[in-house]
Length: 361
Image (cartoon, rainbow, N blue to C red):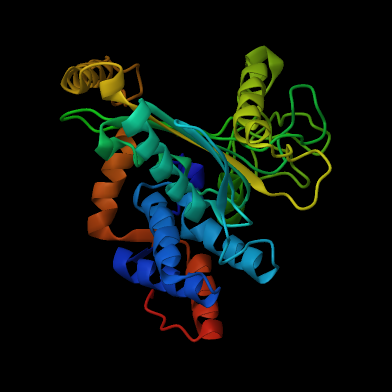
């Protein structure tokens, strides 16, 4: 869930019915010549992010970016994706310019099938587009009594520690593990201080950010609160070396290795044609390692124990990864999805342009 700086305020929010938003999103993908089944899948990935409160990776930020990618020829609406290397528990996919929110779930299904046979399934992808909310792909493993993992490397806008030029993507890591009665453990974070999509969201909202969240154009982390500075640069998690930026920097490089170099791709900052995204998904069959029931019972016990931690002064409770998103999903399923008026205006314009019925206001 985003901090307040990345949320649409109640005064501005326009609440939209999930079904109406889903139908409109599917129609927009259809106008991009994306096949119906893939349009439904892509829309599901975006709507899952919106329902879980991960607005930075839902329709607000991403749909217009994808439309631009299709219109400019950077994305292929009907990719001839294929497995180019494979063993019993692994595979590498050439995505043929296909959007990651479409190829990613298909790759995860392959990983899950391999995990059922061998205990672990890992699939890497190169030559693709944005993957959306990484945890969507990781969570696919949950219903199969598996632990899911997803990583993605795209772009080159994040500084290395001590650097003054972006060389890495925000390179998120997501892990999902099932419990019995408690919510699933779902951890999904960028290896930068802030995901680039959240910074775009903050810019739209005119949000005031705390010091040290980004760097100025020279590569120096900001020292006072304010709106995004002109020419800002994203920085690794930790911000400065003294506060541990080498850890975020190192993890970002790990993601690049696992997503990019392992799939025979080229890291985003190195010379290449285009800037294709690379991804990694994995599924771990719990039964291959331990008893599933015992695992889920222990997950319940552990999550309950963590959430029972006495809160520090000024805080109401201790939460565990996935808890806040689970609560947001339950709430938004009832109240609708809050969108900024500017997003509603964009939808109205694009619906008019594509001759799609507009039902979001």
